[in-house]
Amino acid sequence: MKTQSADTNPIVEEKLINILRQTSIPKRLSKLYSLSSLAIQLSKRALARKNPQMSKQELDLLFVKLNYGEKFYKIVDQFFRKAVDGEE
Image 1 (spheres, rainbow, N blue to C red):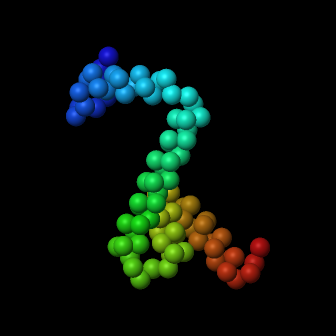
Image 2 (cartoon, helix red, strand yellow):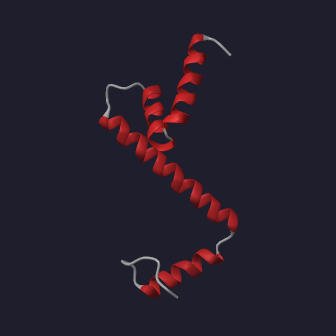
Image 3 (cartoon, helix red, strand yellow):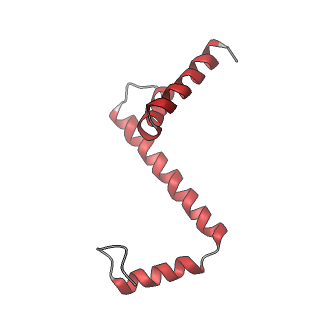
């Protein structure tokens, strides 16, 4: 088997892959969700530290812009603006 990671011993990598294969799908999905949530949380925390003057909503919009692109950012921004103005 060709190794997937240049900095991991091939024997260790094979054992890790075997463990993953034996893990149930719900457990794998749970781990995926947990790691994704952690990555988002750390990203937002880094943005907040770099931009202490921004409100939570501004930081959330910046996160959307950086991770999902300008087009989606504009849609979300318009939604927030309509919600604040009381429009539906």
